[in-house]
Image (tube, rainbow, N blue to C red; front, side, top):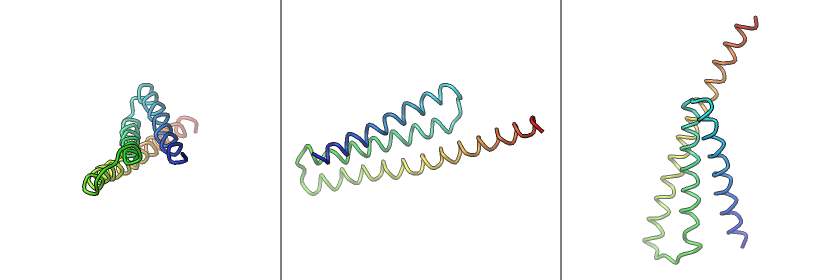
Length: 104
């Protein structure tokens, strides 16, 4: 049953992150939060796809195809997540420099 707890925790964490990112997107309207939310969606999808073999018996060909789709979601999630994080850090740097100019 540890595998089920791992799946639930992984998907649950992504859902929580997604809700925080969507809330920040609504509040601040910056593209970084859209990118981060998209990355979280990809990772939740990857986790759900990875869980399928625990619930359904698949032949080798179907399993290989399913896991290939899962890996594609993971790769897209990595790219979009890193892009979103980079965008967020850049925006924070811009705000910090602007605030330093105002304070000085």
